[in-house]
Image 1 (cartoon, rainbow, N blue to C red):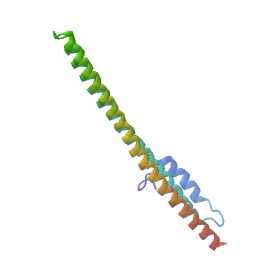
Image 2 (cartoon, rainbow, N blue to C red; image 1 turned 90 degrees about the horizontal axis):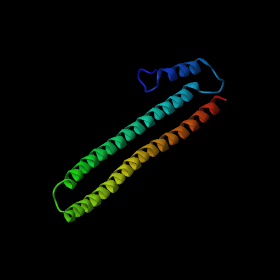
Image 3 (cartoon, one colour; image 1 turned 45 degrees about the vertical axis):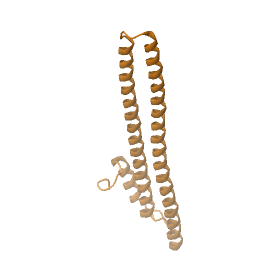
Image 4 (cartoon, helix red, strand yellow; image 1 turned 30 degrees about the horizontal axis):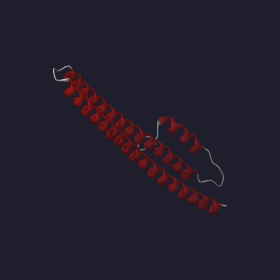
Length: 146
C-alpha cells in the first residue's frame, strides 16, 4: 500500500491489521480509505509546515546577513576621518534605515506566516468536509446492509 501512497510503512502495518478483521455492519474498506486519507492529509500538512519554516529561516538568515553587512559599513564609516557632525548624521541615517529594514522584515515574516496559515486552513477545511461526506456515505452503506 505504501508504494503508491504517502503512508509510512509503520502505518501500513496497522492498516493491514485492520483489514484482516471483519466487523459486522461496517464497511471496513471505506473506513480504511478514510483513515488513509487522514494520514495523507497529516503528511501534507507537515510538509507545508516544514516548507514554511524553511522559508521563515531563509528570510531571517537573509535579514541577519544584510544587517551584519550594514553594521560593518557603519563601523568602517565611524572610523573614518570625517567630522563628528558628519558621523552623527550618518549614524542617524543608518539607524533610520535599519529600523525601516526591521519593519519590512517583520512584515515579510508576517505575510509568510499568514500565507502558510491560509494554506493549512484551506486544506483542513477541505479534508473536514470530505470526512463528513465520507461519514455520511459510510452511515448510508451501513444502514442499507442492516
